[in-house]
Amino acid sequence: SFSQHTHTHTMFRENERRSNFKKGIDNSDGRRRRQETTRQIRKAKKDENLLKRRMAAPAITPNGSMDDSASSSGQMTAYTVADIPQLEQTLKNPQSTLEQMEDAVRGFRRILSVERNPPVHAVLEAGVLPILIQCLTKDPQASTLIFEAAWALTNIASTQETATVVEGGAVPPLIQLLCHAVPDVREQAAWCLGNIAGDNTVFRNTLLHHGVLEPLLKNIAQPGSMSLLANVTWAVSNLCRGKPAPAFELVAPAIPFLADLLKKDVTDEAKVDATWALSYLSDGPNERIEAIMSTGVVHTFMGFLQEKSSPLLTPTLRCLGNFVTGSDEQTQAVLDAGILDHIGELLESGRKAIRKETCWLVSNITAGTQPQIAMFIRNQNRVNSLISNASNSAWEVRKEAVWALSNICTVGSDVQVMGLVQSEGVRPLAEILAFMNADTSVLVAALDGIEQVLAIGARHDKEYGTLLDEYNAIDYIEELQQHPSNAVYEKTLKILETYFGADEQEDENLAPAMTDSGTFGFGLSSPKQLFPTGHAGHAQQAAPLTFSFPNTAH
Image 1 (spheres, rainbow, N blue to C red):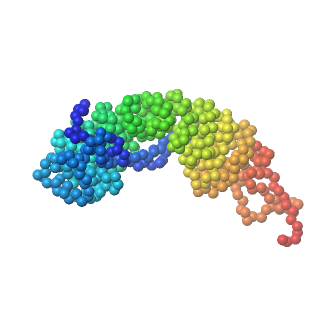
Image 2 (cartoon, rainbow, N blue to C red):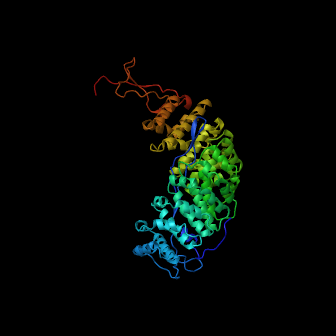
Image 3 (cartoon, rainbow, N blue to C red):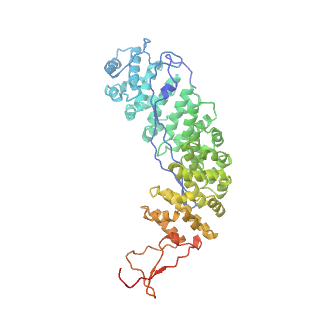
């Protein structure tokens, strides 16, 4: 276990120093997919949140004392780029005392801690990076020097110069410092490593192969402070994220530690990062999902859903959304835990991001089994809220809700689909077709839903074609024949030919055929006129109109 020694200098570990940024891996916005009844169902996508964090130097600590950037003489010193040559000379002078080295490293750290545009290149050009890294391996009793050097390196790693820190050899000594006797030193090392992990997947994998996870997990199990716990948990979350995902066997040991952390009396900040980490780990095959669900976190997450304004809400929904992309049994476990008790209120949330996550989660429930669909549609208010989001919300919410409705149409029973039609749940599918530039996958999903509605209407003698025409769906489907996507074109052509008697378009330059009576016959071209009396699923071809022309030329 770690000893709880106090650092010789009071170190400022409050939120002011965490108010800048932390760094992490950019992720694609793509969804994973799984096969479900001959069609593709989307998997989870990742949110972007702040991935690199930089520490700014505060002026006064909360207790009113001078901050830890005070020099050994006890006086605050403001350092600027102009001081770099003098600081450099002190660092490179083998005769410098420990206190002089501390003051010089602290000076560089202060220069790198300015709020905007820290002069990283000027510091690197001074050639002091190797010295800062060497300071990490000094006598453990020189904890102030080690801490200041780690802080300076943290701020360098939070910029575009992360590779410089890695290539300089900082990773091994930083990992060693995760077991230092002083909690503040451990925290600073974790902070720097978190920034390195957050820079790109190559560095993330490098850290994992260097064995960074084990000492980080020890700090989660026995944290020296809440601030240390928050930083270590954030660093672990950066190790779990990014595409391609890390090798599961390298990050799986974190799962029980993260799940256990969620049940402890710790800060929301630590719980938020732990939940995001679990969301990254569950974004994958069913085996990964099972490894996390088996810890019992589903019921923990249900508790998090009780507080709708909590910062835990979004990552919790992301985890649960990942869980329901798994097997039908995994989806059922989430339903049995009571997720539907919260869905109605979440669909009405004033926060767009929450409605988006909720609609996406619902779309994977409705991609499950017919009994699971029945559980969702049992509450009409839930259904109405979903339909409202599919009709009136911002685009990113609307398309998720359209997916959920489409899945009901394609996976649900005839009775379930007819109930949805009666609730005007097909209108949003028709209206989304007006957006020619929408995502091709969304258009195909809406067309899939409409096709199934028409098929059910044909089986049950329902005039759903007329209803869809009232929604202007036929006009939209005709226009979509010009869509550049072959998948969209083929789907529209199939619907028109099967349910509205549309034939291959004739050459518009061909003259109409002459009838026996000497008149020309013209067929109606508007699909709206193809089923004025017949059933939608078996629309009768309208009889051609005939026109008589006088013999005189126009």
